[in-house]
Every structure is written in structure tokens, then in C-alpha cells.
Image (cartoon, rainbow, N blue to C red; front, top):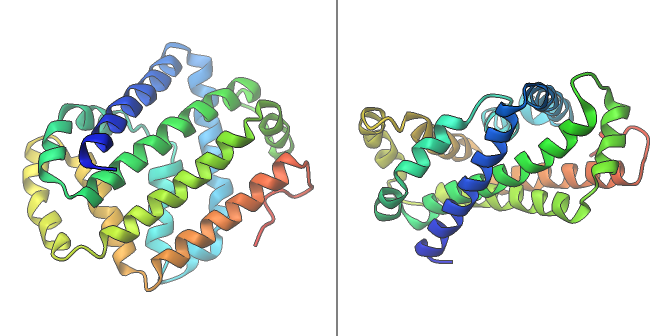
Amino acid sequence: MGKEKLVHTLEQQLKAVKAERLEAKREPALLAARTALKRFQSARLAATHADLLAGRDTHDAAVYFLEELYGAHDLSQRDVDLERIIPTLQRLLSYEALRAITDAIVLDALSERLDTAMARELGTAFDEDDYARAYRSVGEPQERARQLDLVRQLGESLCDLVRIPLLSMTLKVMRGPARLARLGDLHEFLERGFTTFKKMREPNRFVATICARERQAMDNLFEGRADPFRVG
């Protein structure tokens, strides 16, 4: 996939994710339910991957994954930044860096759609059993599997970034201009991902561990097993 195709994908997926977030903002009850769901999922992921969060080598990368990919914070500004400067990104960023951003937005768009469907089922008050029932009720096993494939793909893109010579220096030099251009959120996303993965001795193993556990949790949920998040 060349840069032009990446840019096309990025543009389409940004429209999709913005539409999901705008729909939620128009419905206060849905917005509250989505926020409750994201907080639940963030806490659950922290419990499932507690060892990665506790590990000296993997802590920063685990926090990055949880906050950037599954966090409850508002990413609307990042989306606005991206949409505004897509032509600049295509011109200035390496293929690997542009792919990492695109992978993140594709994953975000799918996750937002699945979260909206779950939130409509759950409301704001639910427990683990309610979550498991809603997960099966909403269904879409192919899309859930695709979601995990996208997590793996994004992780591998970040692993590729750390192999680019002089990228660390380039990101540091870009820090000031990015803030002046009101691209601080986007630059932080890229630089933080690069930095946290660069610290790890085995970043590919980190990605594989997360994906294997989440795939087992997915299978447990769809098959109605007790303690679906007891994995590993």
C-alpha cells in the first residue's frame, strides 16, 4: 500500500470516526453510556495486562496502549488536527509513520462503532456479566476479530517505526513547530508511541502477548465461558 492509498484510507476513516463521536454528542444518554463503557474496558484491560503494566521494560508501552487505544479521553482534537494537515503528512512523513497514524484511525473508527452498539445495550450501570451478555448480543464476531487484527497491525507498525534511523532526533526537532501549528496532540501520539516502543527489548513479543490474550478473551466471551477475562 503506497502513501496515496494510505491517505485515502485515512480520510475515509476520519469521516467515520467523527460521525460516531458526533452522534454520541447529540444524545447525552448515549454519550454517558459510551463513557461508562470505555472506563469499564480500560479498567478491565489494566487488570488483564497487569503484569505488562508492572514490568519495568513494558510499563510505558502498556500505558500508551491503554490510554491511546482504549482510553476514555476525548480524541476529537487529534481528529481535527489530522483532517487539517493530511496533505502535509503525505509530503513530510515517512511511509512507516503515516501507516502508524492510519492504522490507529482505522482501529479507532471500528472500535467507536462497536462501542456505540455496546453502549446502547448496556446504558451506564452494568457489571461484568451484563457486559458479556451485551457482547454476545451485539455479536459481529468477524468485526471483533478484525479489531484484534488491527491492534496487531498497529503494534507492528510501531515496531517498524523504531527501526528508522534518526527518527528520534526528527521527532524531537518537530516538537516545537508541531505545537506552533496546533498539532501537539498528533505529534505527542507519534512521539510517545515511538519512545515507548523504542525502550522495549522485545516490542514484537509485547504486541503478540496483548493480541493473544485479547483473542482468548474474545473467544471466552462469545462462547459464554465463566471468568472470560481470565487469560494467559
